[in-house]
Image 1 (tube, rainbow over the protein chains, first blue to last red):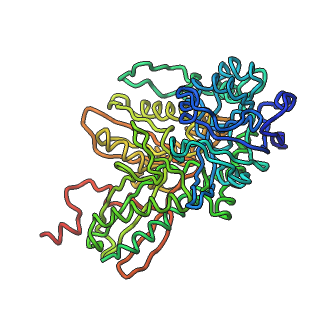
Image 2 (cartoon, one colour; image 1 turned 60 degrees about the horizontal axis):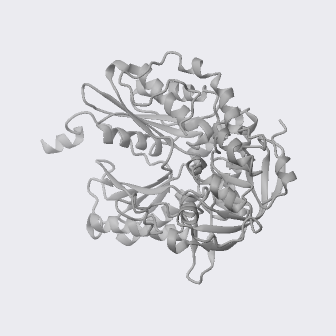
Image 3 (cartoon, rainbow over the protein chains, first blue to last red; image 1 turned 45 degrees about the horizontal axis):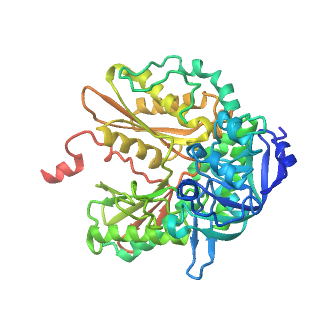
Length: 222
Length: 320
């Protein structure tokens, strides 16, 4: 078994580099990447705070992450392990975020739906990279060359702050969407769905139902 | 009398071990899974995880960036006394949690549910949880400190089933939980799946959480019929065709542990929990003479913890 294809990619990638990515490719990143999740989205998009970076020229890579890290008394940083948080919860902010920041790489856990990809990833020339595992926190931590800055720590706390990290062959990540708007996870779901009837044979629905219950195991809960 | 300073020092060492060192039983289970996995992507994921454990130990960095929500299980021998009493013990565990969050470092995951206040040290209202157990044996003064840093968002569910649902209903809810949270790998499988059956609603959740976090891979319930179910459920979960990250594969369940408690005669409550690819747990026994022995098996579910009768036989003899 040869395994997936490996690609080295800049966090300010060219349109060609993005369009060359295929579902299931394994990616290693070089350049600046920033963390942004609900805290940063709310502050930048709902409270209209000025984003303290020049985006996308500094970085076009948004990591759905909060690292295991500390800020030392002398103002320096120690970053240990780094892994992503589940991205589907951020769909409500991402279209506006991408339009505002020109992000081309959304990096996180578990991806978005193909509808999200087609609606606003593809028009923005962006793709989704998933962390591996989850999570290869120590491997990714090794790929952090330096912590360049931590923004909004006072306002948002360590876990929600905007960490700016310099990646040096940071990875692995897996390409989970492409410029057709196809979704790696939905492709895998479809293959697994073929087994559902066999696996569920001999089970039966609960006697007490729940609101909103579905019996279609090919559905997702996100 | 167990010295309080030794408790805090040991607790800090345990916080570090839990975050960094994958327990050997889980590692053995994952290696076995990696050997059988033939899905291209899920096989890549398992190999990356095995490499990740090595790097974590070598660099002394947490294996996962989400370092979970630290909590404590404390078990005491029946004769044990703690210097300063149990309030001092709780303060020592809270201090250790805060110090190690900054020291390892861990991610300060704990926030207020409404105000999102973050103390940046994993300590707050009700955090870390500290739960207790007591043991008649061995005699003498000893205390087991167990820390578990479980992830918290996906892979857990509770449902009130009824006796008429039977084993087929239990199977379906088990599969539903794996299907719902396994897609896209939200549960960070392959996982140690813990199932709680019985108790009241809160105890049902407690049983299932303890089944996933306080029993090791390869352990079996002392009731042989439940042990058979554990084998069957492990195989059932791995027959879905779903592997790591929800990719096509054959390894979803590293092991399945079931714990039970007596419940209301009309009901059959059930909970399902997933202890993830970073199954963070560490254990130490502290003796009154200052000896500390580290291990990774909490050995929580002794015959005494699963006792069914009013009295515990050796103690009844003493009482009479």
